[in-house]
Image (cartoon, rainbow, N blue to C red; front, top):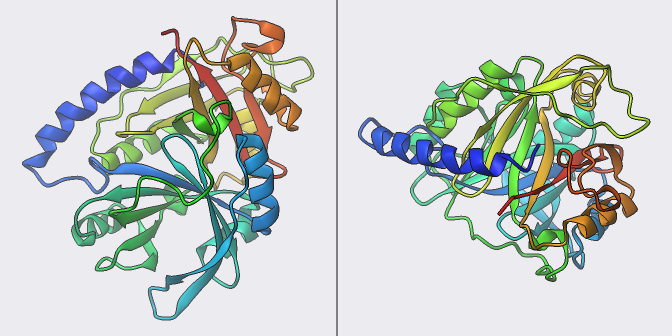
Length: 332
């Protein structure tokens, strides 16, 4: 949510490393040391979504292709799929061509982040079994194959894909140096009505101990945003080797986060993708570009007409893509 989270992320990475070393001797939690390699958006129209997302990211839209996943009971799950690059993670766009988890997600929630993908370098079996013990339900792939999708929608509001040896680079067109996609995806944000138990559950999957949520009240809403006076958030950042996970709980309503929960019927929880900018990067230009692309700007005045203070801007593309995009700036 904020530029200052970079320091918190660095500190949390140290905690993650020490915990990971301790966990090695006890059997790894299912996502310990896994790399967050992709985030997948469910859509009714892959071509339209790819074109829209590519314009926002500042890249040439890649072509979509058909793909089939293995169904647990036999048969296949058909999808139309495309991949778009960012500097450190790929964004996948999935259009269902028949029954399956993506179709179920769209029927219930509409467009949005349906699954998050992690990659490991060893066989999946023991980790998949561990994820099942922690509440995951296998909905595609298998524990003995190259990929497995575990549905945590009922508990965490997301499906998690575990992939063996997934390539680090996407199949889409590489971004230019001035595009949003040339910057690293710093974190993915989840929003929950009661966030601490969710943070604890995610931490168990990642092999971490979740600290208590922090309170953040310095939210500068833009004019016209329907937010209750004093509405704010609690949050905690959980480190992953390359892309962190932020867990948010809204306090007070209405607010952009409380509205998201109400709109998703307290179900799908993946809310935003945050891109990180350094002190010499064109942060103001990125803010202007996101605004020009039609993002609904509700909070975060930093970058507004050159303003250097305020919280990190967030732009809602919920009606078209089902996501919010945030840009953060580090102090150094």
